[in-house]
Length: 289
Image (cartoon, rainbow, N blue to C red; front, side, top):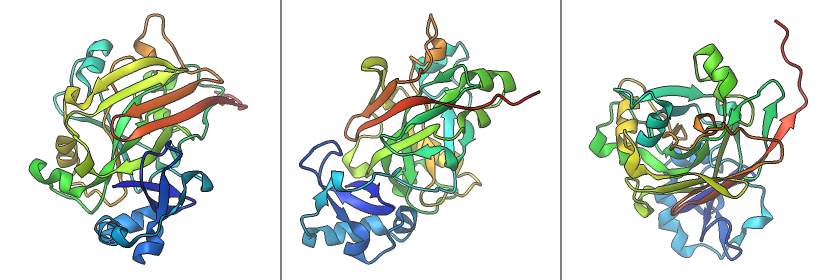
């Protein structure tokens, strides 16, 4: 099943987001559950939607609605550093002995098509295409072999990073949580339609391929990450896990390549589609020391 959020309401899609023939069905209206995507997931909405879609109306064109991030206002956004072996190698740091976790502010989330707005004091804004996991129900002390049962679906994320601040401060969360620094979407695809152990991912900057890999290269797989995070920490429906980025980030290139005003970043994941966002600069004032 392919899900998306439009105008604050959860919908099912008949096909790919960018296919003109794709239709969308309001699942709250169909099932009688909450239109809020997180409340819908927590109430078992995916199973309810599967049961009801056989009698669903034809639906409406995708372009009739404003697209939102696949979940709006999740309780938490977790991210994983150095999780692709090739990316760990390009940094010279190697794969960590356990998943290297940090958080991004949920307030950084934006939708497909919305601009990534870079503050003027950020001199090294970098791209990081990622595969993102959305949790479907409360999860704590989950066994790895059961982990996918707690996943609502897979989507595409962009862990935009202010490298100059990241490496100056020695911590990740603030420099990766600026407003608009977490595009997410455009659709959520349930795990029964995907091979989460070999999902291809490609990032393009102004049409040029800058990252290309597959989840087969993850040091810590999606089930491993879900199980690891839930050891004592409860994940809730709608929580997001960004699973790491492949090699090819701008900071590791020679010469380095950072995002510029007017750039367009496209991230494509097989079986899901493409997340696309333009880049713009914000008129801002550097804080005084």
